[in-house]
Length: 510
Image 1 (cartoon, rainbow, N blue to C red):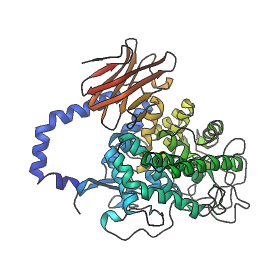
Image 2: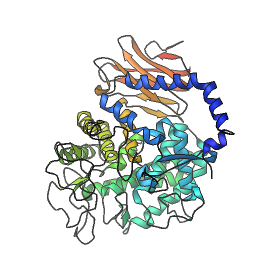
Image 3: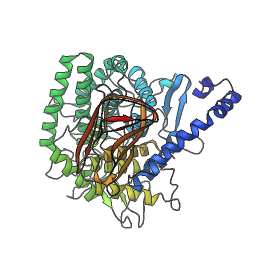
Image 4: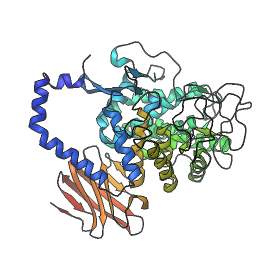
């Protein structure tokens, strides 16, 4: 098994020759991306977070095998990788590669569905097939398996690759059907059986982490089924998503946030019961990123993420006790994984409950922005970057189980949420609805990416323009919704690198 570069170049001299011949263009593209990010108007803490965590993609955490096959650890130790197999429930959080190097994420989806999903629909959450090894024989991970379905929809929507859907839909359909049989013990459309998850334990009973993933997967699978012509499955899955979400909301929403439903929280170790879980509506966040909209009641989702910030964000961790790994401490600020503001902490809660993970901090911060609570989200991001200030911690290495931990790649979600970008390749549509926090004064300058090109969105006194810096764009429709000044748009846009379009004048200028 060789690395991809060993198949792309005959030897080191060939690689050096390629670099020499293309150095000017490569350096120009790199500097253009750097300038677009650092000279733009996105909040400084967001730029710092997204650019610093990109190092994980170039670290020993990630690698590309011959043929272009992407694979990754969860993180990296000094002399070995940490937790093999592009772990589905960890890579669920990552958004950076999907929007900057989407081909790599499509490769991971092919591995998961073509090689790691069994005939009965169970998905191995660690992909050993890339090395020809035996399947990972362990419990299926409810969040990883269902999140992979949502991410398949994300990858298709970003690329417009109908062949990808046709190739992977049979296995994706089995993966969703498996959830009904494996995790819904009473057939009411709400998952409640033993559910292995990203905390390396099993939750029992109905909980909103697993179920928000389930409803997002059902909604995504319904749209995929419609696209490939499986209309009966599309209708059945969408009905299950709607009915299940209504049932879960009635069961678990306590008037402020979603709890775990158990008769006795101490019957099984490692539960959270009445706790306020930071990941409680993670499936809804993935649905937002994938363009699925709200799968849970918007007002309850808003309340839940607001409660997460209110109860789990600590401005000063001096008095916070954690008997597990310590990633934030003393006078630092951070978001803990779970709290019990209404009492009822289990005798033995899930093992990581008192820890602070940057990937979950970015996930929650992104979701706060999507729900209109941008200031609260940015407060969390500032806390992460203050902890990784180059004095207390390495700003380019966010540690969890290993260095350059993959979950930190959740940071790119902040760019998506703040710019309000929605790109649908199949529909030929690119839309922006930026938050006021993405502006500097009355000016906006921010990066955008699509499956075929990337560039800048610029809004100032001269107008609203797209400037393409790499690749190409062919759109039926581009729109921009200014937070105060209204909406502007253009149709039939065809851009190549170096070209721009004025959405006010509706004319292309070169």
